[in-house]
Amino acid sequence: MFANPDVNRLAVHSGLRQLAWGLAGVFFFAVLLRAGLSPAAAFLAVAATLALRLATRPIAFALIRSVGVRPTMLVGSVLYAAQFPVLAMVDAGHLWTIGAYVLAVALADVTYWTCYHAVFAAAGDVGERGAQVGVRTVVMVAADAVAPVAGGLLLTWHPAIAFAAASVLALVAIVPFWSVPVPAVDLAGDHGYAPFREGVRLFATDAFVMCGFVLTWGLIMFEALDRRFDAFGWLLGAAALAGAFGGLVLGRLIDAGHAARAVRLNLVAMSAVVLLRVTLSGTPTGVVVAALLSTALMGLYVPTLMTAVYNAAKTSPCAVRFHYLAEAGWDAGGILVCVLTAGALALGISARLIMLAALPVLALQAWWLHQRYDAQQRDAAEAAVAPPDAALAGQTD
Image 1 (cartoon, rainbow, N blue to C red):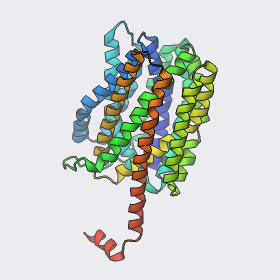
Image 2: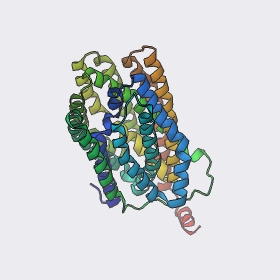
Image 3: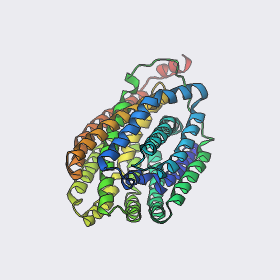
Image 4: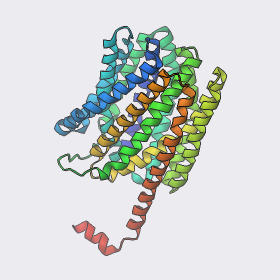
């Protein structure tokens, strides 16, 4: 771990939260399908969740303004724990249960993620950011390797236990982050859009990949395994284990000053992931092979993206406002891809072909990441050669 105890606490918090997600939440799309929704309707339910997040985001902003970052993050954590029993009640024959789940998830996400990202951005160190994101990724992947296996078995035989255990773990996860300092928040000033533009567009591309490509792949896996929670859980766990160390290795590469190389490597790896999954997903055996090979390559994705995002947030005028707007960008990107995917599925377009839409978005994301890392290197170079008088002036202003 790190000399920075706050980053360590946040890693433990993220790991416990991910354990809760792996026991029940990771199966949410499968639960919607088993509850009677068609694949297109399930994507529309996700789009509705993101639309509600976008609509209620000002409420979260007002809550942060009135009570602060830590209490708002606590509200989001408690609501996160509450979403699992609501998911257990979902039934396509009773639309109110779907609406309740959409509401629970939207309110939990909108009050939690802006605060969490702002806290992690402020607590972390720019020089070790890649490694810190990489270690957090490894902790979360370790949870992903264990929890879905247990969750799949429980959902097959004792679903109530899976949902209850997820809620308990989500509440326990509150403890580690409670002593982590929160960033100073000045929401009175208007800094415009420009200082936060990078976060908005990078998160929009991430949403397109996560809500389009990743959810579509989950649909393909679940269908290939005859909609069995236990088999699905085993495959998710094995795939997560296959990619456990990619993030940590790449994080160190970024910190060593090789960010441009990391971005190129990530683009190649993610393009290979898309092509592997499209090519091999025609049979159950091919799906298993593609899941294991492709997830190993996806260990590169999160550190490449989030190192750039967190460093941009830390150097922005306000980390909270940065992530508030970035999360709005994520919602907008997710809504767009979910609606497009639902429409494509309703028209009978193969889910395998839909995944190809991720390729141009990944290329666009890589271009923006290059711009961000280039700017970061220029800033570091300028700071290194700044004359002593300029440095002194900066200290006395």
